[in-house]
Image (cartoon, rainbow, N blue to C red; front, side):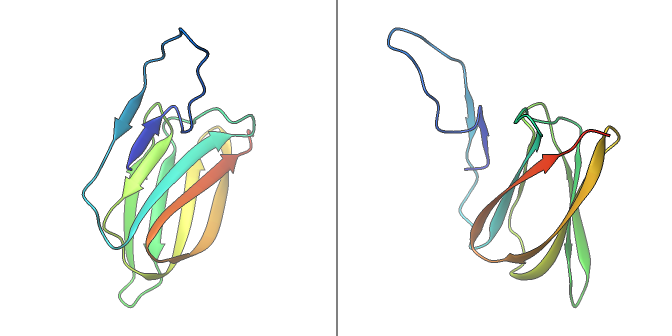
Amino acid sequence: LAVADPLLPIELLPGTTYQSTIMFAPHRDHSLRVIVRDAGGIPVPDATVQLTYVGPPQRTEVGSTPTHGQVFFSPIRSGAATLTVTHANFDTVIRELATNGTMEVEVRLQRL
């Protein structure tokens, strides 16, 4: 699963409909989906998400969140990495990750 908008699970009352977007990607041994939300749980568009592998060799992958606030990296390298999420209106979040397998990370940003 590369993107789910809105995030799963979706709860619906009987007789109601809701438009959703679900995107799949080919299976890879190692992948990462990053979900970026504000403190209230609302998706944050236009955040920059960087995944930097510790190395060797050091390498950085960069993505930007669209309206649904999600970025998908695939394939990724297994091992130590740093995840950095930035946005002009929010504090920067930096996390150390051990990337392995299929991963999902949620990042909550605090407004400046």
